[in-house]
Amino acid sequence: MENLISLVNKLQRACTALGDHGEESALPTLWDSLPAIAVVGGQSSGKSSVLESIVGKDFLPRGAGIVTRRPLVLQLHRIDEGKEYGEFMHLPRKKFSDFAALRQEISDETDRETGRTKQISSVPIHLSIYSPNVVNLTLIDLPGLTKVAVEGQSESIVQDIENMVRSFIEKPNCIILAISPANQDLATSDAIKISREVDPKGERTFGVLTKIDLMDQGTNAVDILEGRAYKLQFPWIGVVNRSQADINKSVDMIAARRREREYFATCPEYQHMASRMGSEHLGKILSKHLETVIKSRIPGLQSLINKTIAELEAELSRLGRSIATDTGGKLYMVMEISRTFDQIFKEHLDGVRPGGDKIYSVFDNQFPASLKRLHFDKHLSMENVRKIITEADGYQPHLIAPEQGYRRLVESSLVTIRGPAEAAVDAVFSILKELVQKSVSETMELKQYPTLRAEVLKAAIDSLERMKEESKRATLQLVDMECGYLTVEFFRKLPQDVEKGGNPTHSIFDRYNDSYLRRVGSTVLSYVNMVCGTLRNSIPKSIVYCQVREAKRSLLDHFFAELGTKESKQLGKLLDEDPAIMQRRTSIAKRLELYRSAQAEIDAVAWAK
Image 1 (tube, helix red, strand yellow):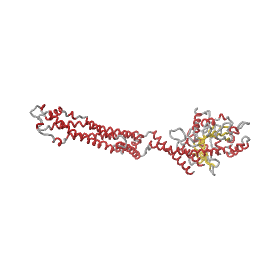
Image 2: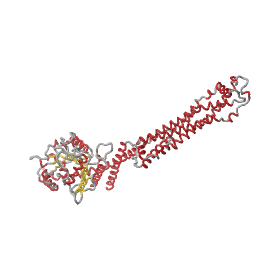
Image 3: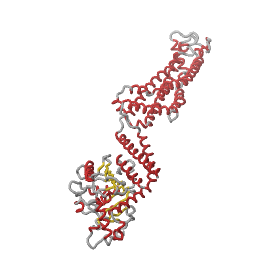
Image 4: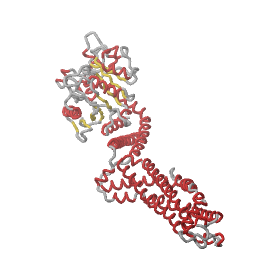
């Protein structure tokens, strides 16, 4: 069982080392889940004397006003033999065998945290005492409750101390050691008053009555000690501390314990309860009870720790890695984050994530619909055909077929395809741009670094712009090629007889009959529709090749090339993480270290059992 108290001692020390001492925090706290005994009492209640009696040594600072201004986590370790000594967590490997020096270090360490202003702090001091005259026990000595601020203290000190004490003892895992002096009315006891507020049924409160030997003659504390005046679940324990005269004379604590035993054994009012009175009995009872409570809490602690580790790991993963310090590390980090974005973008195009199907919709719906809206039949109306053919003949009418007229009709029709072709290029560009923006927002690592996020977004869109221009050039070139060279075989099949040509003797405005002009218009429309069918297939191929395929292949190539020329300072600017996130990550990492340490410690005890 002794290793259970040792386990909690280790966990408490780890909590303090890693900044968890039960204060309000956005981070989970292990401290609040650990069973502990908090010593509560008003000033001059004999609180310090009770602790020194349990330890068997003078080690606490004394003086007027508020002496205890920080919680003191007092961990007692029983050793079989050897010299007594103390160790502070903030001074590892330094042993204090001189308890007067140990007392001075408590004062000095208090001042280091609070200054010499008599203010208080909730950051605990950890002190371990090793002695053959103690039981294995951990106590938390809290500042004494007071009613009036002394000179040099703020008016809020009274409430500040009460709030600190309450923050410790209101925790369900806290065992309250309420110190009350017997020579004052119990109804006015500061310790009982605040204990009753947080533990109204007295289920986790131990009542300790001090200064029994200083009660008025003819009075005694039997009703209190037997639980009739104020009932608690656990029996009251009376102690007799050293008097101020004894303290001034440096009366040995061992001798004081002996005198305490003799007092209860010889005093008629207390003889029947002498076996459960005194500081030695108090230490043993508290040690045994603490062990029992710790044992009952182990399964719950394990469950809490495992759950919290999973939550902290998830939070740390969400926050991302910390920033590298060297140039190579920064460059690697920027490129890895950028590649993560690039991979997400590719997944959108490949259908792993949604959005890429919109590109196919451009080719299957938007582009064909825009070609249909060109209305070539209106362009090839009989009036327009007559006008273009006669203009093409110039001063000398054609002899057989109006070749120049045909060419002009075909070219003037095909050139209108440039509009839908450009629109298809722009539509795919808009979709790719939208997918880039979506991919940036889905890249969790980029949320850490606003500047890198903006640079990656800009670089990707710039690349898409370049690809759009190249795609537009190549796509319009396909249209221009169809305009620039007609398929001869198609036109060789046309009838060449003179009757279906023009009559050179007629006026230039009446050179062709209506039937022939309709035939020319129909022929040109057939050819244009044939070319449209070809371009309907080849233009999407050109767009995919120049934009979609290229975006998959080299979206960030220019960005990566520029990265290689940047110095450490410039790379650092890209990784300008929000300071709040950096602080959060550091805090989470420390807290995770604490919980993993706790997990290992508890598992070791469980295996040992």
